[in-house]
Image (cartoon, rainbow, N blue to C red):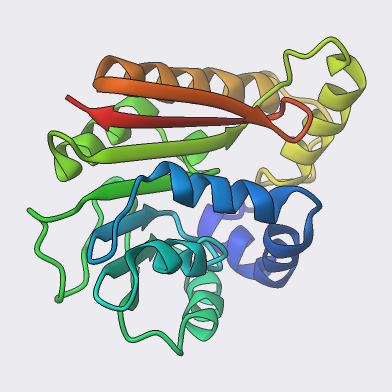
Length: 226
């Protein structure tokens, strides 16, 4: 069997991911918190890397208002179609297809005027998470904000059963899903990528805020850049 590409995998399951992204208990509140962590003001420009089905875009739009700009970038066609449907009523929300590590921006956006970058549940899919964070920080520049939210193993006292469920979810959401044994455990590989991204963001920041959510599984790091 040929290996299914990430675009094919996420495109095929776009409907399910959309449901999970919007209806999982605790996740809508997390998305609101991530949008707030971007420290946006009316009129600002924010770019979401790996916007998926667009679950964060309305929250970001609430913060930038009618005169701000929201850009969502993702590489999967069926996923982006859902994001476009969700945001069709807003003329200042733009959804573009592209790689989060080399993002195209909407024609309406001056790439020297991006105030914040948000990336939720994205860096674990990248080959070089720290390098991507560097690029996002460069896009925003001094005094801008970069916010990361990612799922990794919980460090709470009740972590063992939570992490068992987390491991199963990671395996089911990592293409291909037909393998029963892995040479390198996907959840451990994911942890390493997320640690690298969040730690690198800390090195670029003048001010940092760290939080955990959803039984300690979700790590939220917001940084104002130097």
